[in-house]
Image: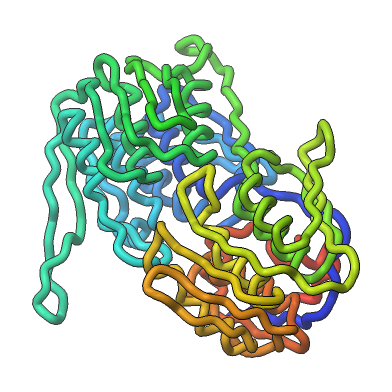
Length: 439
């Protein structure tokens, strides 16, 4: 079984570089299906979710060529299939972005219900609301489990024509906002999407599509307006050999993970390739704990360091949609709070099953009680190494941070979760002094 082995107690110091955003690229890659010309995507992270996306594109008929480290040339000009391969769809939650992209391209789309981390219920009712409001007809393919309970196994969409309209989402949903954008960019007329999510990766998807000729405004606010266009080719003339290149935005959560690791090991780390304002709420919580966070003026760098030997201060966090504290940083922050002095409270308002990591962190000596809507953390002086597992992607990142901060050796299994979202994590951490290896 593949695992990470960490010898803790080393202070992280030096420079580390952030890769392209997982949450952006898993929507941008499906979005290439909407283009009428080839494109080049740069700053693509080397993670398993990207490999799944690229496999899906190839199996749909796209031409995918790796032209450099983190760079791919993609041509979807000959794509005519509309069914997402089932085996790939079930491996990744973001596979549902192919529904919106294929619906916009082919007028038809079919995909099995997505996989990925199990963080609780992941209904797609808001996605279907958007598709049906635009004029698509949805068929839910249902099955029964071993207990005889009925569940939705796959979704098929079909339309004669997508027509711009007003879409009002009942809840703020990143996935539904992304899918509504994908389905709307080539619809007839003007579409408005209200009660949108505002995360950086939504802005990145809109920027990519606009770069290729879409007309999207308002991304990053609660209302997005899309004027449908017949073609997406940027300023590249039909028949031209020119290919436009788009670079994926830096990963907010990877940067935040490195910030938490630097803090938990009482280190001094320069984190390169970031957009500082994306990290504001993460930085604010770290500062409340006594961690120094500095933006390097006029550069895409954040420095995170700890001075003196005082224990971290306790604080409270509540996860919220952007620009609030991200749910994807909650487990990593919990590690820091577990060695802070005093009582901290964590309220999780996004995913109800986000606390699977607590059992693993307790194996390392953490003192955490779960409540109906979160957790109470009583800080202990130190954690100790143990054998733990990565319950999901961000829980796995938390186990790495805990192992780096703990006394003794830590072994982490089920690391495939971590490799879904962190590119070359071992090499990057070793570069700033971590004693970590993959076995």
